[in-house]
Image 1 (cartoon, rainbow, N blue to C red):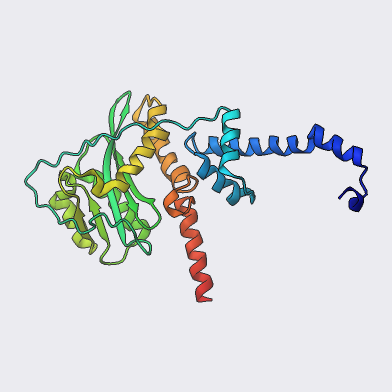
Image 2 (image 1 turned 30 degrees about the horizontal axis):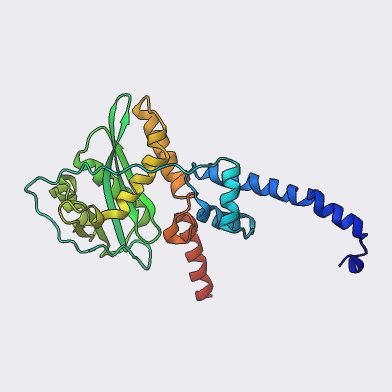
Length: 276
């Protein structure tokens, strides 16, 4: 090799011994891994970092090497807390059948939505958040925040999704059995937009696991690490988390470790190529 490239043998062995070039490459790789880890809010493990290195920089790095670098840099993934279900389904309102039946796959956008409500602690009391997630890309397509868990909370979240996505007739809308979702006002909204309602079985969190998984991510990556002095502050930071981080940046394993927005853009591009 030295003869072919006309390099002195002693110079080659000196290069091997000092490893100056290798160290520069490793230093740059360390920087990239740390940037990706911090952008992922300390939640990316080796699999997601590996996929991000390939997606953003075209680098193919083994998970083992990434793991060693993370140990050297003391990059530790946050521990997850258990999710607590706070939905009150003790009411006498009519319940919809479980049409979704844990089939969380959707072949195209706006076929199936799931929704749920959670609470956010602040220095001014509880703030309630309702979300609507498209099962196709796991994108949060609608959301609403308020001081109370009135029916308007879930109606506003779903109305936002309807306004921005304009789903076709027959969309399946799956939630738990909470009184807000079983209310006549909410059923009127569904009827008006030709949406089919589906509800989980009583006390079965797995029937709506995608919606609950989002809240786990939100609390692990933002709420548990932030003290919201005011509800205004909480609304601002949750808005930024959903719209600028979760939908556009955060990797999701279900969609090939792409963000929901990037996944939809990629699928739209592929469909355009097929049509052309």
